[in-house]
Amino acid sequence: MAERIQKKINSGFPPKSEPSEILAGIDLTGKVAVVTGGYSGIGLETTRALAGAGARVYVPVRDPAKAQSNLEDVDGTVITEQLDLGNLDSVRTLVEKLLTAEKAIDLLINNAGIMACPETRLGNNWESQFAVNHIGHFVLSNGLLPAILAADAPRVVCLSSIGHRRSDILWDDIHFHSRPYEKWTAYAQSKTANALFALGLDMKYRDQGLQAFSVHPGGIMTPLQRHLDNEEMHALGWTDADGNLSELAAALFKTPSQGCTTTLWAATSPQLAGMGGLYCEDCDVADLATEESERYFGVAPWAVSEDSALRLWELTEEMLA
View 1 (cartoon, rainbow, N blue to C red):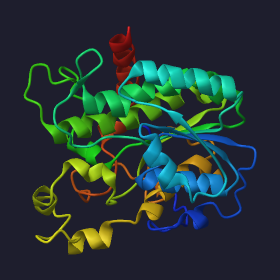
View 2 (cartoon, rainbow, N blue to C red; view 1 turned 60 degrees about the vertical axis):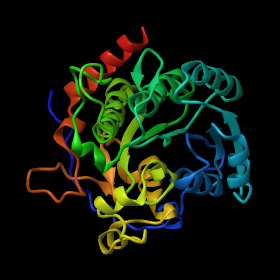
View 3 (tube, rainbow, N blue to C red; view 1 turned 90 degrees about the vertical axis):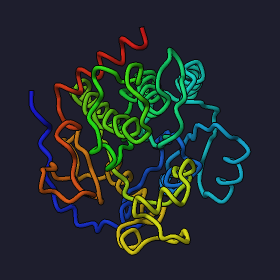
View 4 (cartoon, rainbow, N blue to C red; view 1 turned 90 degrees about the horizontal axis):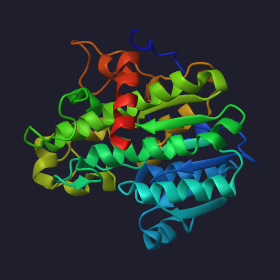
């Protein structure tokens, strides 16, 4: 097997499109969507857009009070349910609730995640970023498959990041048992895992009508940066010494509403019919990155490798056994 073929299709949408542009003419009335992390940052804007287009949106939440406050001005039908992606009992409880409530789920948006956090162990001594960003969503998505496959042309969208280009999966030491923990490498491999999971899901279930995509939403200042102080963000080139966006970030970064549009495009666009398993960015399919590619664009070959997708799937199942 080789990499999934990645090439822009010239969607016609600019990188900083707004949700209203992406969803123009798309009616989601009667559709059911699940958006993890759908009450904060770009997840909140994803929920707002899908509910505004007529979907019934389930938002799994860790912090009910914060969710209630953030979602109170969202028009449409939004239902919150408790979820801690780092606790698989919580994930399985949510799966049971959703399967009882809905016969079919049209859209699953695996949006929630953590980034560059201090070393933390979850589950069976798992590194927390891999556990939350990948394993939790792996269990959720597979648990919901009966309802997803019961829908007409369902789609699953997994939020990856350009950060995946920093590291392939650390196949010999995914959970940093034998090497020193490094928060950015841990984040990068978890985002590679998100892309590979979407590819694997598409490979396994495309014959049953499911399409899955991974997405780099773009650079956006959201609560995802909560573990970073300004000194580190300044060193990364995101801010100046006073905490304002740098010139580079001001040119490249998106607003939270613009940051959800690649997700919306991957979830709903008829342009992607029959094209599952792709990694998307800037409201289009991303090009395959090479050594000459710009730092902030393109997908690394290791994140669209069909062999790696199947290998990761098997390893994840072994972790859960």
